[in-house]
Length: 294
Image (tube, rainbow, N blue to C red; front, side, top):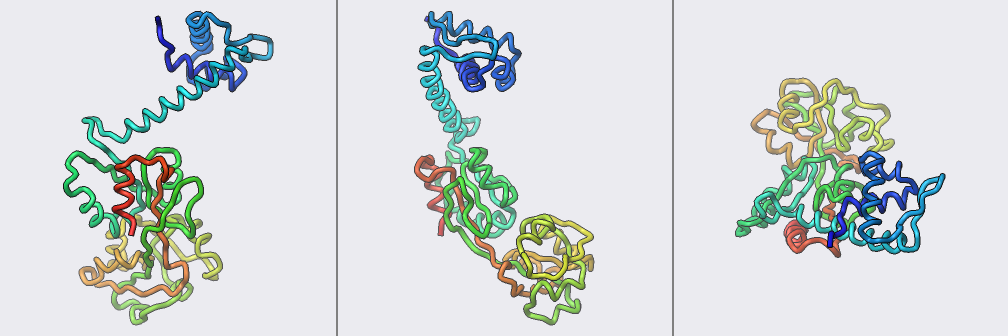
């Protein structure tokens, strides 16, 4: 006996939910005639009328309602199976997809990742660099298995756990008028040009983030995302910049730079590690979570 096929069930479910074969075809990216043929094949295979056709569209028969309920469960199982297979690479190795922002990749991941992978020859980790504001959505959508982001509070829609915290500081070249200071508020540096790419990345998002702690926007002529390049630009006198303290210290002596502590409350950042659902994650993802959590 010919078995039910997934594409036919997908079109049938779409037809019931959209109440129209035309809209179901659009949703499933097929032509209307192909959608109609799939439904007819399905009805012929099951020897049952599944949809009533009328001038306003379609509606399921009682048999169609039953099939719709079962088809939803089948398609969900297929989706879960596909997601489970996605946790393996093309050669069959176990794989975890981890998204993190640049600060995390540089400051926090190398050592614990080395410990996690030690002795796990059949495990692969895909590290993806992403913006903090995108990462919870990527985890919720199952684009990645795990994410690390910084935010004032844990994001909704995912299971988040405290990860690390850091501080950002202000980096200036030696000899700069501010270089003799040990700390200051960002407000005190607004007379000088700043290199862009702040916490929250865009200037508008940064200003929303820091609220009323500055009286006017900083002057920004140059946007530099890479931390080392930003420090080289500072050395050449192209501006001063907000940089995570742990990263800035790697370049101070080599490039003749000075790190000033920022007294603003927003200069301290909280990082979170998140998974889609802590109760259903794979054993491998659970092992990585345990390895990364403090």
